[in-house]
Image (cartoon, rainbow, N blue to C red; front, top):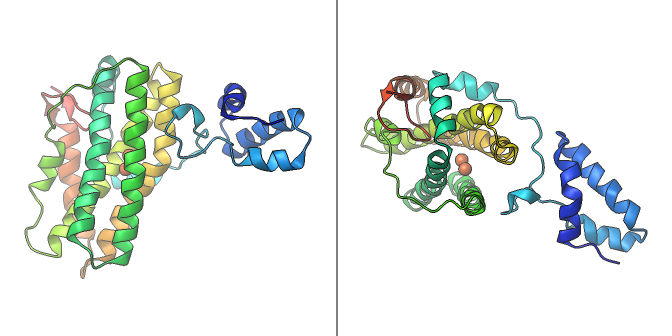
Length: 265
Ligand SMILES: [Fe+2]
Ligand SMILES: [Fe+2]
């Protein structure tokens, strides 16, 4: 007998309630082993276990716990309760803007990959980042489709522009600044996904936001490490400068609600 994806999907709900990745996998394997006696068939099924990078969020592994303290220490301010409340009230808009963010994250990384071709580390990290951001984009599109939510045009908020206007105009300083700004955008995304996952009244979406924490916190660290490795000087002062700019954009009143907007005006 063979077990296909559909059979696995029926096993998923049991596993979804368990928080630990390895426990979940073990639980699925136990379920499978009850129905399969043949070891060759078991090998085949191993390959069909829920993936970490599936486009269908139903097939994602439950995230292992992610330590967000580096993210919280890096950022100069925490998201206000007022923003969380407004976001929950306007969830479809936040989901739409999230889709935009994923696409923009991939686009920005793609621009960098063409502009700075000299560094192996940069090219490799950016290639991985683009792959992951496009996967997130497909996943969010899937969520929108599932919710019957149509694509809606949303203008860009003030957030990225508010940081990019401070970017130095000469190289390699311009590249270092873009990478530091990238680190802040990723860290903030991570902080907001965690804040939303705590209070959102939609377990499926909350689970998906928790799944994103792992990759987005890594993206923040990758951008920061790249910025330092490609800079001749220590970047701490520049990081401290953008930390203040970013915190101000997040904490000050903002007339437009967006995924990275300030506190609702
Ligand atoms: Fe992403
Ligand atoms: Fe990211």
